[in-house]
Length: 267
Length: 267
View (cartoon, chains in turn brown, cyan):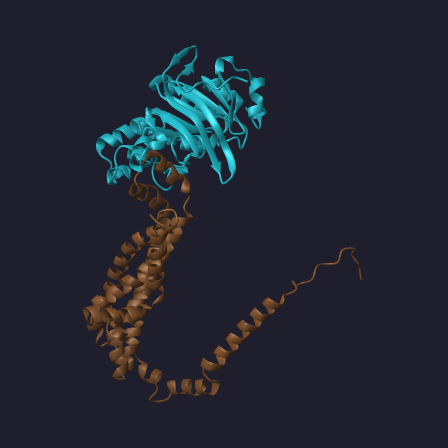
């Protein structure tokens, strides 16, 4: 074997005691989580078997029942309208929150911290929880769903809009500031055009997320197709439930394809 | 070494006239590091003044201090009849509108047209949506922006996206935006730095033309010895935060100036 004068370095760096402890902690957390919550294999296999039994879920789902396609279609339209309205309002309101949350554009550090905290709160609480809160405020129906989607989108888009604004080249903003431009003029003239590709991409992702989310909001009574889906499951009309799921799939895929096409055209 | 001028009068050629810029005992420190150490000079109207000095001598800091993009630590700045350091933030905005700045990088807003970028210059006088984009600008503003573009020879590129123009063309658009401000004083921070020699020369000729034809005052940081000698009436040399040279260009000679340049052969 040929020998070389300089031996290669060790494949892995020597780990310190703290790193070892951290690694053990992570492994322990993963193991304990799996043991505590993951389904037992025998239970899982029995459950899958039941799906295909004569009275099982999958057996009763086929063929899907499209006899109520017209009312389901209207509910799908309502779902899309909830998504579009909630997303639109959320994106519009996300812009001022994002401006206030940026280092460069926020008027004061306290305002910045408050804006960031609000965005984090809106993002962290799931939209189903927001839906329940707004059902209490405005009652059952699509209005609660629209409000829930709006709040969720402020949290989602607020964060990405703020990041996009932070990452823009400060040069044009400095130039306009030196001209004597107002803060609003500077934001609209210099920041927004530079952020346009990022804003567009985020907005389209937000719309896709809203359509997917709005279908689920009906499960808690916040309007849309989710109400019909829940009723179909509650009444064991699994064939109708499958029809609703397939139509929801068509809607979500159509929106994703459409937004993908717009993204490719604009960016 | 020439003695710095007294601030009460400025020299232009052989005549002595009232100055448009008076700087007295100007100091600027960052933390404990002194960048400007008590500068005294004055500049008269209709004069092109070259500010030269090696890297780190404080040239850019001085330019930014003049319009308070960087706050001076001590001293007095009187420009266009205003005590710059005493201006409130609102008055500072109005004052900056009278001072055109040509940056080393053009600092144009990307993704929008050349015409929209030039229209931004009107934010010195007008605020609101009519100054944000060319499509929203009144007819008079659009016409003036076109004449500014014509002045820099780019009227035919009005609707071209600025990020698709060459470096020289972008710098010309930046000068057109500055003209749109209707400035009384021009500060230029190495306007030819990022340009090839031919294009850099054209930009310098354009700036000198504004001094000669429009009667504007120009204070420019110059990094090319040849351009300093060709395009200025007067030379200020900065060394270690102090004015180390102040003389009419007609009396200057290349060997004496070389010590103020990092790469004099490049000029």
